[in-house]
Length: 470
Image (cartoon, rainbow, N blue to C red; front, side, top):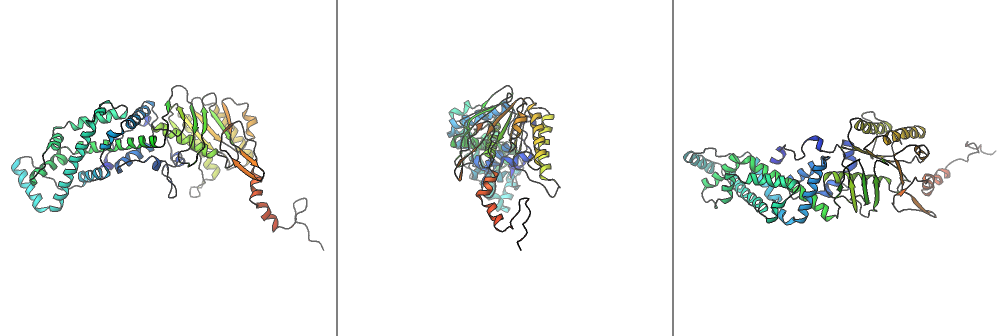
């Protein structure tokens, strides 16, 4: 389609966009799976395929520049207040058929002078009936597209657009001022074949580039409307963009894809630039990490965030290590995969700029002694890095004693409530370090030891099988 050939990015220079590597994009779960939808599906309210391509491009490259983020925020807020203006955007049918008409490579009458044009037009009409029908259909749809754009631009409130919309609407108005396109919009219904083919000549020979660009802007608007709709329909809050040292603050933060989420606070700044998160399995640590990651991602997109309040200082890079596995093909063990993710964070820090790193239980792929030593040294080095933030979950609660001597570290934990034989979780984050050790309890509750003991020979005090009695 024509849209796929458009390479003019709306994102500007690379330094304007947030750095997200392949692993971080995977941890975000943008596109979900066959069983469950991802963040893209959650945000996709687009009417057109071109709009979805524009939305996907935005979601693959969020903003890092606060000016760009604010411009998108202003656009989304404006669309929400004046949603009726954007009802004039082309439907999926209209957009796809105009796109196809412009990119189909059908024959076109190129002669300019009347006599030559008439001869060539007759030849096309008389000998290429199948093409002629498609051409005339495309001309009619293109006229409808142009009239819809004009209706949107002439809406009374459309002259007060702000943010990204200001430049998009301004460019549209400039393109629509073309004398040729104005002639196409004002043309009475054509009755003769040569009149219809003259309009086609204008659209596909002289004004094709402008029409393609107008269609591309419609797709960009479709993507912005989609972000506005998801923000409005899901009650997301528009983040406050702060200046100064890197920091994040939120109330009642949740993950948007959970059906019954529990909201939690978040407060990270340079006084506590490392958050050390502990707690038993199933208590909510990983979900909390994903909620933080998703909120930061949405905030850099310029859309709303699933929280009661959210403020942040934009960063240049967002790195995660949440879902890791070994790689047998490349000969990478689980621990080496963990080390490579920490190395990616270290490289980003060495390059300068602000980063936020979120790591879920680093170094669990090695022995406890190595895990303790490596975790302590990495966390100690992270805590010394100014203007970046780090969230690290761990089961190594023994680290608290040695980390107490390190500045700029905060502690939070999730807990389990024990009610007799039952475990319950409230999924609330608390200040401090967990002291829960539930591993043996879970194994007992699942009957693991009962199964193992049932079919085993008796053991003596040293753990050796007892000799059978004579």
